[in-house]
Image (cartoon, rainbow, N blue to C red; front, side, top):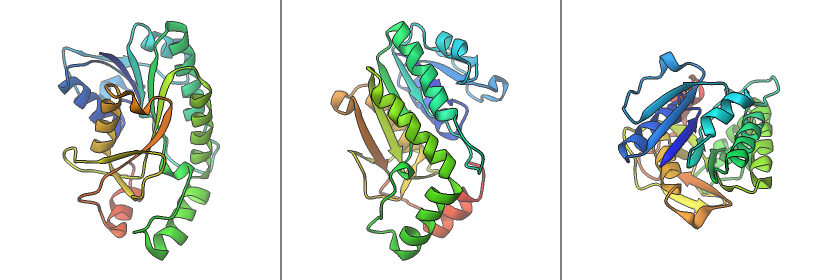
Length: 231
């Protein structure tokens, strides 16, 4: 397939691009910093574009078979609109060029819920702080993005991972419609699940959760490795 990946230069985007190339796809990797993109391949086109630039997004979508978005924005106190504005441009371009398949990364944080293995500290302290304080503007914009995607007439899937962390290779991850009872998702599993959606019509026009069930970090490890560093 001819695939466009937005957010390709982020940690998940790089993994998704590499997995797509390994699977035989032709990939257009969209990034604002093409010189910093580490992958090279004869089926890879690295495009310099800002997702907020409607004309640039339009050019990156034309004549493709599918669009995958792994956009990521650091949490902060200032208003965030990258997800919603970016998806607005993607949807418009896809409708204009009759590209049907769209999958976007959102987060379990847009609909926080207690986890059976979370314990008091995670469920009552960490989760509310992350979703209602630290990441409030981020999750607000992700909700706007999800609303825009659902309102489109595309063959969309919204993918909600939990806390992201690093593993060297994909695992037998769990992908379910709706909410999943798991606190962590390896980025490599998130990438693999998005790629698998291209060959699976079960989750068209659905919101799914993907979680990793092996080699999860402890909460202190996750905070030290991920929450307190740039991901």
